[in-house]
Length: 311
Image 1: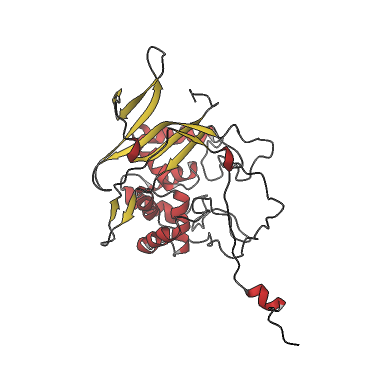
Image 2: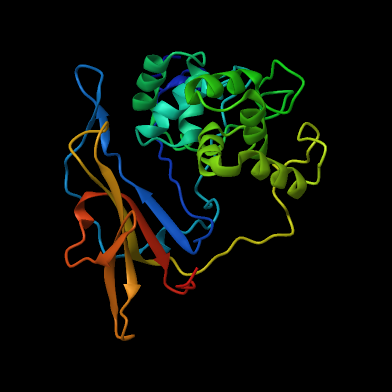
């Protein structure tokens, strides 16, 4: 008997339309919105995107609150093998270069581990191809049968490859100092480098203080982690209405990514207590801003309506 209806096997292979959505399970007190202000030019040099963004002074995101799967929705299972292995050592100097371009650290790590860990150009290409992925800035989950920590070549709790790379790139700290900083910040090279420079006046004293705080006066090799990787089931997420007001932004003064200066604007109460005014923070210079560059922001800070304004 002939029939034009597809068989079950044929139907299962036919392309079908689908729709994915991302929603909020809770609305935190503060919301940070990042603009993509960099792109690679024809010469593979990062360049600044000069575009005005009509950023509204208030956001109502309540309509994006997650309510769980609907009756007519079918959840698509996560495909296996889509997450790059975490056993690849990455070059922290390349991570720093990528984060300086405005990308999140998790996304940079994901790119490096997807491209071998040492090829900056390949990682950059991967970022521009995958920066719109919903999980781009999510923490990388542990590889199958392993944990989320990078592979190490030594007996310490941090990747010795990252230690050597950071020592060479910074050029002014000892191996022991860099290793201690990386252990304090769980292997995060950018945070470790910032901490090292911030404590140069008495670096050994700062390391000793951190050892004491971490409950390991004799050394950091066996120190307990600063925070558990497992979520605390007893804690509840801070939640509130999905209405936010714009209260701050960071903008860049300059023509390209290799020069210029970042400044911050915050919406603060007026001295007389009547209303609010924009204030510019430019290093040590603080002044009232009559015309804040809201259309040219790199980062925007929104505060939930019922959140503590002094937080």
